[in-house]
Image (cartoon, rainbow, N blue to C red; front, side, top):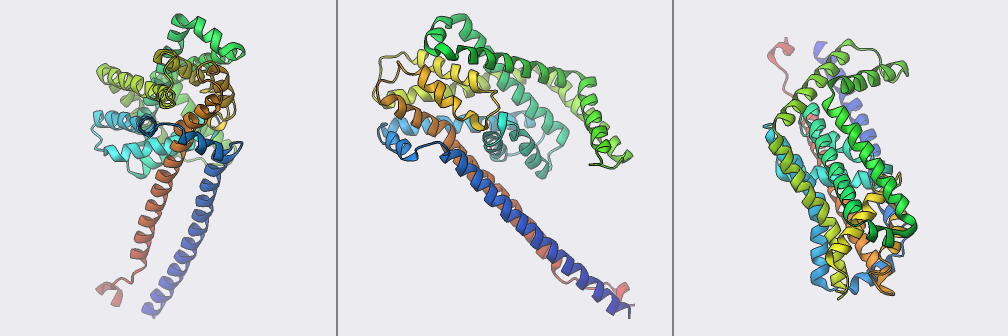
Length: 377
């Protein structure tokens, strides 16, 4: 009797597990389609792709390849910094693994307003790779703060040393430059306050938990509350570690400067790719940086539309005639759409790889297990 009862329970469990797997497969399929649809909508919406491809043909291949490599360096370098900071915490995360996080972050930042989706998805994959959430949060916040901080320094520097050029080239869009710079300064100040002030971060975490309980999204749980307090304590400990190791932060700042410059230099590489040489490299780099400062914090996925409008205005006297539109298509095509496609491929590969691993585990669990001697009694 007992054997028959156990067989029945096992069959019911396996049927339930199979149904659960089928539901997950349906959800996974929907998620896959949505990701692909969002990516291609972002790429094709409002863009004449035939014009983009025609423009690409006009650029000398060597310069086009160099620009593509600079774009990949721009995204991948964030992964290098994540890897460097995790290694500083004695976390043995692989470099390729961390570069994966940077492409995932770029992808979800590109398809969400104000780039709000990148870090949560990076944290999700870091947690899946069994990295501590408290340490991962500090590492990503450190990278984000320094990334914004370097842009602010560049923005202020351009105001001090290139204000006349900015005024001449930006014209009616100069107010957007000031707005973008102001918003970036506010974000850096808020992030620094959250990072270095233990009370502020703890208050945010605990108040968010209370709010979710009040909204009946979560039920009250003392265990979860204790877990959050432990998370805050580990977070604060990690922040103190980085504050004591200023050389490591300085190294990340220096590398971030190189990262930022790579995407600004990319435009000059495209400029030379069109066999142009009348405008100085520094001028082209400063103008591209001014566009980034202006649109960086605007609540538009990938800052689409406004970036193209500003580019046309800023580079009107740099790229003559039809080369203005052609250069915009190539530059935007490489520093956003090309990187978006690469990031989508990386993200989908990670998603499918994780799904495959889960299927292998579940299939292994489905295999019949030998009954123990005790069960036969």
